[in-house]
Length: 392
Image (cartoon, rainbow, N blue to C red; front, side):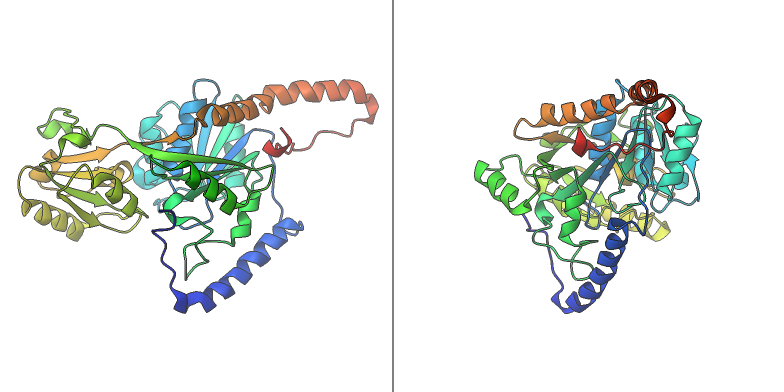
């Protein structure tokens, strides 16, 4: 049920109260204009959350990239969490995972024709992207809900079904990065990782509990898994892609270094009775001792056996040194994608495409020319245009 992965450390609640005061002060400074949020004359769609990790940001960014890439010229801008570089970097075919981080690297591997860039300063990153590509039509911001210095046209907030914010509390007692009122900044709220058999009554209960404003739209998505992909196809299995449903008799190590592995364990357990998790921290870089643990653990497992890992972990395991031949021959990545529920897909797609089309640079230029003609000498110039989904 919803909220079943939440754990509140009540003894830390006084610290959460103090933390909350600081966050409320920062948000108030943005709300009254002491700290400035900047709008841009190019459509910007932000995807993020108000909790610590694990809501499915990357699959949702990939969904948007897949939706828009055939219709518009797009770029994805991320912070590049835990990368070993600084400043603005635009990825190319030779860019390594260490330079841009595991999640941007994963997106670049899936969408090699899309511009992928990283910059901790999102305003600077947007400026660089727009200057370097005058034909750019839309920018997707990955994990930027708290980055309030950018005012996106569409602000998408993700909420994990198993960790609904209505049951959670602030850090460090809970996993929320700001009070629940932060959801009011969202134009779209998506409840992610929903069970495929979610009952109509549950939809209504969650909808009522989220208590959104009329201008906000609520969607529900679930996770779907594709065929397994070998990480090292040259080591023996020649690109063999087994189905999850065919692993009933196989002993499987579930190797993860993500924020919320419980969801993956929950989804795979019914299909794989012999599932043994080996869990590391989120964005974990595999060191020599970690590789030895993987090798030794897998060597001690019964046959038939294999290892399943996430696509994000795969980007780091590909560069890990010392993996045994046995591990390399049996190591698979599990691709994941999101699917909209309640027949909401077309509605969501139309909103996103309509926003980008209406606010594209070409559309804005045409509007500005019309304004200039009508205003003549009364025109005082055109500053950055605030593009808001709420006004569309």
